[in-house]
Amino acid sequence: MESCSFDPIGIIHSCFPEKFGIPRQPGLAPAATARLELLPPYDRTEALEGIEAYSHLWISFVFHAVKRDEWKPTVRPPRLGGNRRIGVFASRSTHRPNPLGLSVVELLGVDTSDAGHPVLMLGGVDIMDGTPVLDIKPYLPYADIVPDARAELAPDRPPVSEVVFEPKVQALFDAKPELGKHRALICQVLEHDPRPAYHRDKETDRIYGVSLYNFDIRWQVRGDTIHVLDILDQGQE
Image (cartoon, rainbow, N blue to C red; front, side, top):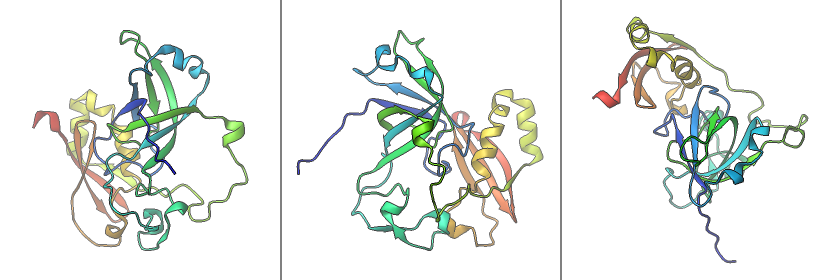
């Protein structure tokens, strides 16, 4: 069989500059936004005619930051504690024979202000900045919702933790309104505890960092609560 190759039709510019901290499914962080920049020759407004009639879109993309080594038939999903192995095709792991991703995202609008080159504004994304996009398709509720579908390994949304902002961070929000507008995003990302599964059963005072836009969010887990300790502007370091 002949091998296939595809040209990206666009590139994602999102609030996630690195893999750590990205929600493990779309829609878990509604405040997570992205711009989908269409690339030539696909950056034509005619190609998007009628797209604003849909509230959500399917985005097909490439897990471009995943190390490509010999594929493995089983993976350890974080949702199952990182200890149980299941088949790669029974998971949504990024480590796949072909590193293809698929996410349903909210269409917030179409920006044509850049000399007619359209950009899609997206919400609820779980896609890393710089990700190549292969295709865009409308989300059709009558066809894409299956009311009686089973998902026994992940039947419900994952539980969330309480996120607490330390006084130092509260003061930063008060002093920098441009930072305060990201408060909801910070909560939605951290409440799902981005730590690797094997860290969660350990008693530790370790301080973690998550990058959102150009900010480095420093946080720590204390019992069942996630404490935001500091927010550093990486653009000013």
